[in-house]
Length: 446
Image (cartoon, rainbow, N blue to C red):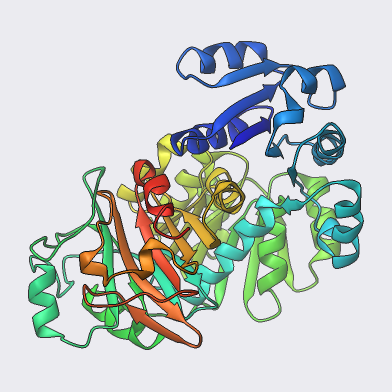
């Protein structure tokens, strides 16, 4: 697929790197020539320095041959204009990043489609939704639902008391023959393992597990985790994510939101009737203590500064807060953050990439999730009629190295995959895959 990405910094470049691994032809349009020169010297991607709202620049990028145009600059008006222009110049499909939820109404989306914008992505709204889901499943480090919750992906960090420590997958299956979940990846010492029967779990492993709804309690028990109620929450940062998170929760929970900018505080106080908005610097420990951090059930740090978010979450852990969530935009910090005690990392680049990736695939995609902390993704693919995946039971399919089938949904039912399972057409199949295996696994479903 020929893809043009219009960006103005890291989001566009990161998206380009992710899609390039999947064998797409990528051209990046960015106004920062120095950044493009540095990036281009380390990759084979085409780069065009300039403004994506310029007709001549877009023609230089060969927009008339583009299968997909993605505009993810920070200014939403530029993204909207770039996509409208791209469609008129010949791009087959367009996706625009937006910040304002007003564009997400049905009426607005219809209007934008008529203008040539096929899809919208709002990273801040998606991030806030992810945070809210995590608070509902307090024991999980990361969670993502497939097929409206018929299957769920849980990330659990295994503590010393977890009953599965030093046991192999085969041993666990023998002890619990009717397990409704399956481990599909283990992240250990910065390496990702696709586990087989003789692989075992160790303390501090990050275990990715696909589960049916009625098996969640057993999964948490074997992972050494306990659910706990969340009532009192402290949010650091009153930007779009902090505001959307508070607005989603403050009718049912007690929320204190700390924001450094006084004008923004006044605006937040007008918008959030049930949230206590505090003007102050959350890096000041005395302020956190005065505002009751020791009694908080959850601490959410979503300022524009990754270092501040990491530091304040570590303070919260020291004061006994059970659930900490940090917005970490520097991807290099994610693995470190998870290993030093922060429960959950939110990253807008990965959230944006997860949404956009489904538009770039040849197989029919129901949903897709780029995972935090490891270079891998979990896809929910639809088995098309007469596709290779429907020809034989799973054990007789030559699934590529670097991929594993975790579960299947069929109508109202869900199943955890085993070697004897026969996938039928129109089944939705959840697959964990490393980047190099994505294009290979797609071929099984077409």
